Structure formats: structure tokens, C-alpha cells
Length: 257
Image (tube, rainbow, N blue to C red):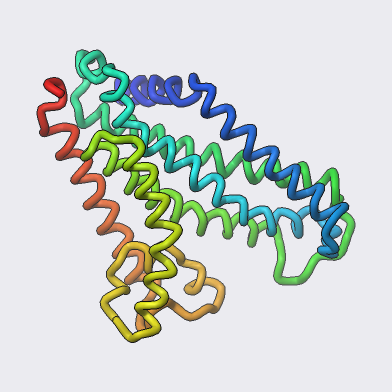
């Protein structure tokens, strides 16, 4: 366990040792500030409470989604493009443990992105809108946190997909580009197919990543879908993605690449 922790720490150093990472974190904060200024001085939104602002900034999780996919898609592939894979495998740790360390580091980065977004939106909302205004009954800090939880499910699944593509094809651009393309286009395509009565679309990953209908009283994409079904499908896809990643990284001739 201690060796895994050291590997995760090493992967964290790789992530936060890049200028790119700090630029992404900075852009996330700037996006929150820009949104606050826009809603305070340009748009007539009627917001006069920090929680009201925070509920709207959950839409910025799309940025966190893109940044997380970039890091996940680059996690394994970059070792090959930089030629550091052989140095990495010299370590006494097994390939499986190295792969898990990389994946855990990606999950921690996702948590850091969402936490930063939450904290930045809270302080920006407090500065620009205060905490003394009226707040709709259905809106609360708990509902904001719940919205972040829903977004986290989608981000984790997309990042896991990018991680698998990175391990299989060893191409950062393919992993990042394909994952972002699928997550932003698949939902529309699936909705169209569902309207035409194709029930099999409920077995596609992207038909199950949005869990909000089960908690907020909406209608699932396909009639008959339940929370248990969607969670089961997400778990199965996650297992497949990680198993394929393991086969590609731990079983193929990595050192000879």
C-alpha cells in the first residue's frame, strides 16, 4: 500500500508540475469570476444570493470535464510520446500498480477541479451577491453539492474512457479528441434514436451517465430505465474500460515500444 501511495504522489507531481495544469486551474477560476461579473453588471438575472449564483456555475463543470479528459487522455500515452515508459517500468512496482496509480491520480485531479470550482463559485458569489437575499425554497447548498455529484459521474466515466483509449492506442490526441467528441455528441444522437423507439440505446454508456432524472423527477431517456439499471450499466462499462486498460498496459510488450 505504501508503494502505491508513493506512485500516486509521483503521478500527482507529474500532473501539477506542468504549466498546462496551472493554466487550466486558472482558467476555471477566471471563468467563475467572468460569470459573476456578467450576471452582476450585464445580465438581469435577479440573483441576490451566493447559493443562487453557485447553482448556475455548475454549468461550468463542462470546463472541468474537458480539463479532466485532457489529463486522463495524456496520462499513459505521454509516457510513450516522451520516451519515459522504460524508465517508469524500471521501478520495482508491478505494471498493474503503476496503472492504478495513474488512474487514482486522475480521479484526484477530477476531485480537485470540482472542489476548486465549488470554492471559487462560493467566494465569487459571496463577494458579488452576498448571502442576505431571497432564496427559492427548492434551492440550497445541498442541492448545489448534489448537482456536482451528478456532474462527477459523467466526468469520471468520460475520463475513464479517455484513460482506456490512452492505454490502448498510446495517443493523447486520439484519447482526448474522441472522448470529448463522444460525450458532446452521443447524448444528442441517443436522444434522437430513443425518440424513434430504439429501445437498445439504453445499453449505451452515454444513455446512463445522466442520473438527474431519477432524483429530480424527470423522465428517463428510455421508458423502463431505472436508477439500478443505469448504475449497473455504468459499473459494467467501468469494469470493461479498466480491464482493457490493464490488458493494454500490463500485458502487452510495453517496454519494447
